[in-house]
Amino acid sequence: MNSQAQILVDSVKDLGTLPEVYSKANELINDPSSSAQDLAKVISNDQVLTSRLLRLVNSALYGFPQHIDSVARAITIVGFRQTRDLVMGVSIIGKFSKSASGLMDMKAFWHHSLATAVAAKTLAEAKRHRSVEVMFSAGLMHDIGRLVIIENGTRLPVAELLRTAAESKLPIHKLERRLLGFTHADVAEALFMKWNLPPVLREAVAYHHQPGMAPRFKEEALITHYGDCFAHALGLGNAGDPYLQQPDEENWGPFSAGLAPVQTLADKITAATPELINIFFPEP
Image 1 (cartoon, rainbow, N blue to C red):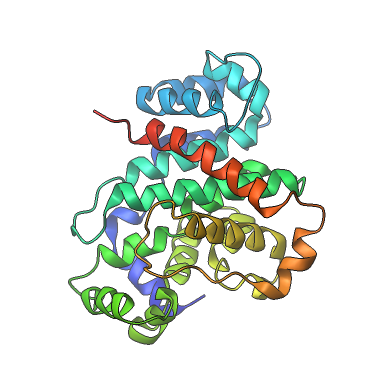
Image 2: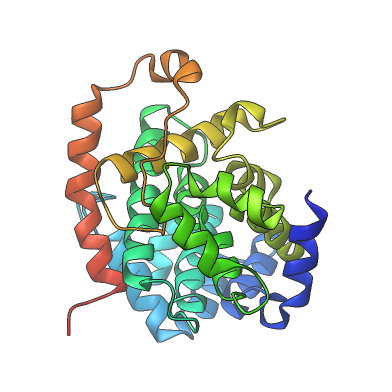
């Protein structure tokens, strides 16, 4: 782990804990005596979370044939751990929904992140991944380190970073390494360590720009990486990087074996993303 990124994360006090609902949900998941009703009760105490979670599982992204009208029913259909992963993703957007610095268009940022989450879920399903919701969460949070960096612009050269990114043709993560000594992926890794998130999620996000370097969870890092590439190529949102994410061409051949054509995947991602944007950022 990058020590400078860890120092940054440790210095930001309000990053110290995960959203309370997720923490309680995680405790129940690890308690063999807990039930779906126990988890539903914890989630249902947060009305905004409940509304968004139900709208999410009833969206076209999931395509369940019957309407799901309760959290308990959602847990039964989606699964215990999968619901926990969705709760984390939904909660994270609530925690980071506003920018104090004014340097980031938060709706555009989360538009890109949600598109990446949709793309990662779509690819994970196509690859028959064992935990599709983990990949949805990885896609959703892949750029969260960038928000931590931007919100600390008073002690980091963020304005110079953004200006140089706009003027040059270098990917912003390479400029971060040059100007800061670490990248937003390094910050996310340090943050996920602090939050004690699962290693698979931590690695998928930490290596989403260098998936071939992932030591244990290479497929998960590749899914997150290609999800990010799809979101960039389709112009869905803006996370602050003015240039397209360049895909890992070396691994695409083996990874894409058995997948639907790229245009088919792109059409599915493009169709599903607007509904999710409206769930989290409804028009007034």
